[in-house]
Amino acid sequence: MPLLDLGLALRAALGADPASVPDVLLKVAETIGATEVVLYLVDFAQQSLAPLPSRAAHADLPQVEEVESTMAGRAFIDCTPTVAERTGGFRVWVPIIEGSDRSGVLALTVGEASDDTLRACEELGLLAGYLIATHTRSTDVYNLHRRRRSLSLAASMQWDLLPPLVLKTHRLAVAGLLEPAYEVGGDCFDYALNDRCFDLALFERPFAARTQPRSVVVVVAHHAEIDLAAVQVNAHHLHPHARADGVAR
Image (tube, rainbow, N blue to C red):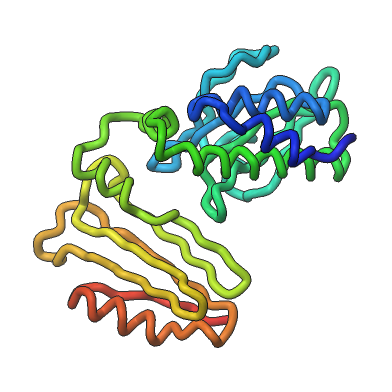
């Protein structure tokens, strides 16, 4: 099984239409012998995975996959390849990762499920994530496809301003969740990791005025050089009702 040709992948993406990521992936997947490529994007509530239209041929018409009860959903939740044997080969699902944040699942059919093959499939999922992240600012296709119902104007603006829901480095891990996904419940968060300084802002609506569920942010520091006490102080300084929960390892 040949390894993923990064140079070919970059050349295939160069000058491509921002909405043509599925076509670029199909072209690159052919070089590793993969077929029936389907790119699924998770909705804003992270409950279902919907396939993007593509020109690839499929044995079965791609359908919306539920996150909690499908092979595609397992790959998304566990962030690892999921494999199922089928006639003439193996169906593989790998997470699509934009930096650290999962945005969907890439499904493809391969002739063998060796370690090298799965590694190449994972790399294709990483490529998909970076391509989508690059093009999201110049096309609405991907964000619109992630909606299962209409976003309010305020919620649409809020999602555009949010940082990635997940950030993982060797020093720090951050995970955020914002509910409701399609309305504004009054809470929001922002963060930035600048060298050894991690800035976290939590904007929380007072409980007495709350009518919707709240946002949740968890910060895990892997090394002592990230001062979670400072994160607590910074977050509280921004809003008297804000609170940063940190777990040090």
